[in-house]
Image 1 (tube, one colour):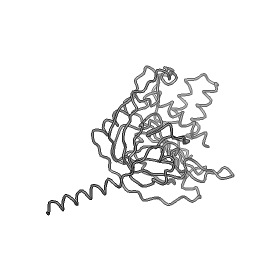
Image 2 (spheres, rainbow, N blue to C red):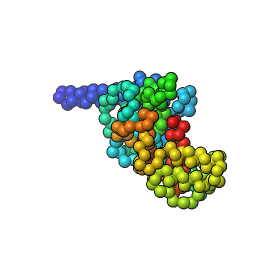
Image 3 (cartoon, rainbow, N blue to C red):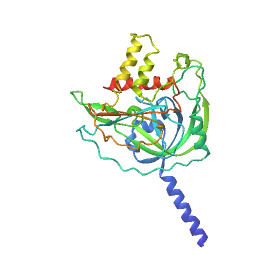
Image 4 (cartoon, helix red, strand yellow):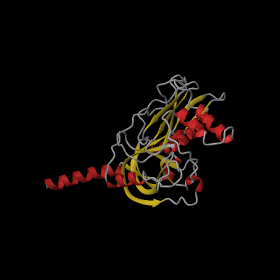
Length: 309
């Protein structure tokens, strides 16, 4: 009898834990991310990593952004993720009110074989004789379980005078209304990407120089790959100027390393000032951006900063 009661108790606990996981499709989540906010969900989809993405997506969802951003929990030290990443935050000197920080349940990732397979596949580079920024050899179809963080809106919001009043959302440039912090991964299957029809991504048009760690110098170096005075060279010089001069406090912070975990400063407001009230926290993964690829990546990110400003 005692054994039966123990078995019944264990069965109830297991059933209760399973009931806490909500099954949902990518499209269901994207249609109303806030309704899943803070909940543990299970979703199956195409998982992709690249130059500026780490997402599970479904192209049929009919949303402005048909993907959920992915993050590993802090301290995972995985290899998969974006090569370049920009987090937007309101500056400390931006007087607009922000929603109070939400206390979210911590997530612990099960580093099982499926996790290791997914992380390895999504960090295997596509090998080419030319340059392909952040190009990965595989996408992966997998079932993911994790904590879903949902936002009402994403991106930068301005008032009628053009001043920045909020920076909401997740992922690169805060473009995503939902984020899945991964807890478990299963049913992993790899699909090799066919780059044969994307010649512009793989052609060998790079200048074979090493890149310095200074973003402005590196972007100026990229400009030398074009004819002086050309429109392309002017565009790259514009992107270099977006990072500001050495020692200038212009709200652009640059770091080097992986950006596949929940940001340590995971809030809408940062702890530094910015001339226009917006902070740009830029991270470049040097393991994925070798030599001239780093210069091109920095130039690309600088263009985003210049456009937003």
